[in-house]
Length: 66
Image (cartoon, rainbow, N blue to C red; front, side, top):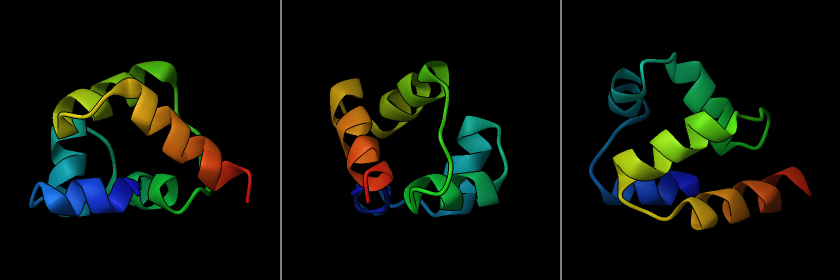
């Protein structure tokens, strides 16, 4: 779901990483559910993508439970 939101806004992982001031591999691992992120990072991610924090958190919880 995270990748779909990002792609829906026309952003590559690289472009999002630049906006988030992090490494592209970190974005990749988050989208794959392989990494966890701080609340601050997730709040910024939601803001950059224009989605609610609750939606981001729910999507990540779903990934991490797999």
